Length: 138
Image (tube, rainbow, N blue to C red; front, side):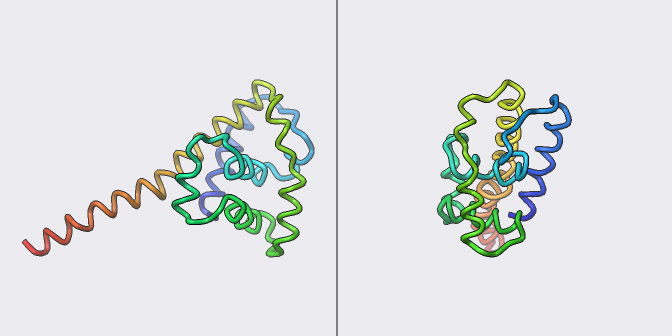
């Protein structure tokens, strides 16, 4: 997750620099990466997010708690849960065009990278193992 968060920071920074200065709510400005993770893991914003959640064998709350601990560098569950609960995602219903672009493009790219680095890579490995074993027997 630490490496994945670095990728998300890069994507967010990239889109933030391309788009005009955006007017975000305070709870987004203070912790944009945590907020994007809350959207990613805690909503249906990404339609097939459950593939990633199932891959990690964690609930969305557990995934968010782990991410939160990494971002805040605070290992207290209550602190991180309170921080996440304070982030109101209702403003997603009224996003401006640039906010929508940043959120959508950042999270879609992040989702594609997460899937490529986890599910697709694992599936590829699972398929290669029997081939390698068969080659060794030959």
